[in-house]
Image 1 (spheres, helix red, strand yellow):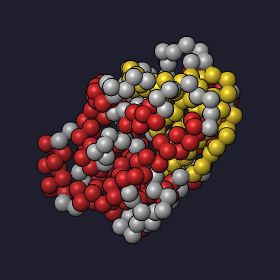
Image 2: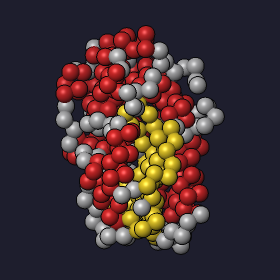
Image 3: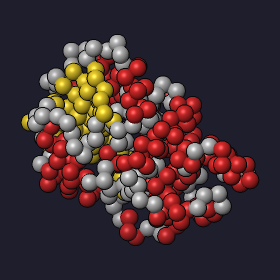
Length: 309
């Protein structure tokens, strides 16, 4: 793990105090996130994701299995999804929460004979995705909410989502909808963050860090991994793969945390930036400052999950 990453709980209180000196953390913790908040968050954060995360348009975390950050890690999830599609009889693929189109564009170019669809609720993202993919005949991006999918039953052989299902306000409804539009034998693959088992017994400062992280990312609350999988089973899915990849996103988190620590180093300047720039954008600094603590200390976890209908 990168030595620049700070994860020691003895250091956490210091950083919580830094955050509270700039942001009204009580208001953040008590905020109820709705659909408009999510859209506003991604609109405001678009430039931040582009220039400080991935210029190519990835809005998910890079996976670096060797423990060293490399931009090729943004393609790790896609290469693993490629392998799953490549060994199956897949004719139609749906991406949930397609963002700027980075994932589906990559895959649609690899499989020109397969029909790809991507949905998202953020108009700014969809505009970018459509512009980047206008020349790709087997790919279509449209507005869509995964709580109520506008597709017929059994429409897709393969469905995937990268760090979007965490925004669900009703996991039962979302999983039921995915199950409905997936064909028998089809797979649903996701990479996403969850709360770890044993969350209730965590120390208070770590619980506060978890809630601040989630709210700062415009998520009401990450689902607990065991509860979410139980809901998936009740929806009818069979669990094929469950892999904890938390260590593999730490290099990317370390890179981002270093930037956030620089932001919080001078509170006076930080407050000026907060007045000039959108708060939804600047709250990203809270999330990336704290997530290394929550991941390393097993409050949050990042999983690859493969479900089969």
